Figure 1: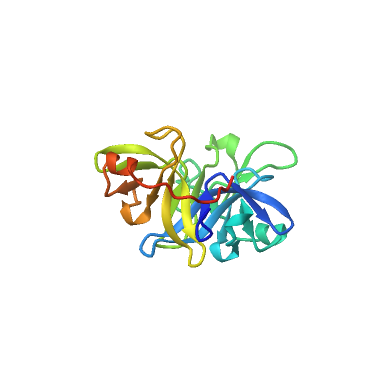
Figure 2 (figure 1 turned 90 degrees about the vertical axis):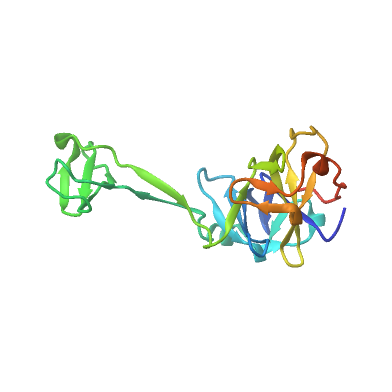
Length: 227
């Protein structure tokens, strides 16, 4: 195991100082500096919830065998969420409002029945045949940065070779050194680590400056395993 390299295996276990707190959902990187800036961690006990963890909170010891945070679970749960939801504005047609004057919000009165709360007041949705409220979700990451997800395609010069399993990082400066390919790639169970210097683009999958044969001949990089 190379003590200067730490794997961030997406789906791997994340541990706080007082116990397990979740699993690694995504890795946020600065594509220009090619450094990890944040981890997106999904708590075990809360569905559809994620937290944006600054990489400075990560214990850089690769011998731990898991991703360890330098905070307790209470501090972890206080971190900013990595996703937000909001209600789509409704046109207000049928209630006499113009577009932008009304937003549907769910409200359940004690007597039962669904009511629409608008900027102009409250109207009975059933009486007016109003639609159900619509939620839209979006992810919150720093401007100019990108997320790496497990399962993103990895594409050589002559075609796809597999999918992303995670990243290998130098913990001294959080620089990405290699991309890990998931099992089930073009060469089956053979472990493949691709130097980040051979990555040309991360906007639409991981694109390489290598052919399939050149990837096949890459030397094995020994690293610790997370998850």
